[in-house]
Image (cartoon, rainbow, N blue to C red; front, side, top):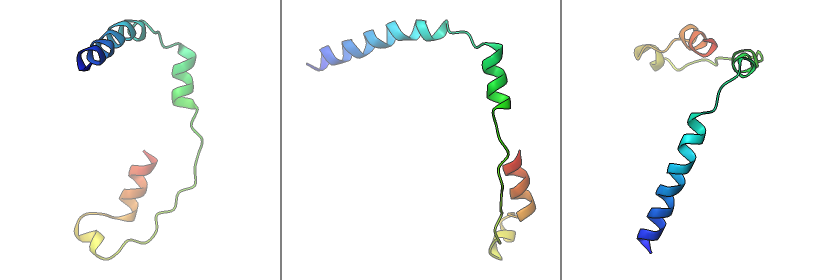
Length: 67
């Protein structure tokens, strides 16, 4: 029974892998990937005093999230 399930899984992967490898990403898809984002409001709430000891600062967090 295990051999049958394993064989079916391997056969599925062998048949599906080539079809996905031949897919082409269009220029429109690339445009949508990078330009489909919308601005979001962001609030970095106050950090505990111990955050500074490990290098966490509100400005750094905001910069990292915006990036």
